[in-house]
Image (tube, rainbow, N blue to C red):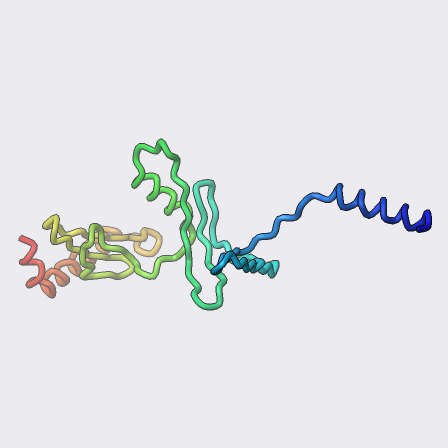
Length: 171
């Protein structure tokens, strides 16, 4: 053996001793008779999440899978939170700020929307035996807001007449 060969072998041995073991993500399957099969996880470099909104308490993202795409809301609640529903409601409100709802007005507590327009909505909640009326008057468009309010009240009255049968069931 030559001196060059010995020096080369010494360098290779030092390199092997200094190398840190590599960690590879994957799945190890143990089959019959201790037969091992390892499948390394493939990394494409692409994220599996398309972020829509993010706050300190959570995030909303869309999955980018080929088979089943979906939107996911991830909210982190502190362990000692006293009012969990209120915290969740506030977190969702912050996360969805700026997102448009497809429904103009949502009925509270599982109620039924019987009239829904930009400036007027009428909802009934059978469990509470109540009718909710929401009127919107834009003073810039209608400087005579008294007349506008009376027009909206007439539309409410016609809504009540149209839905008289279902409203009688609230009693």
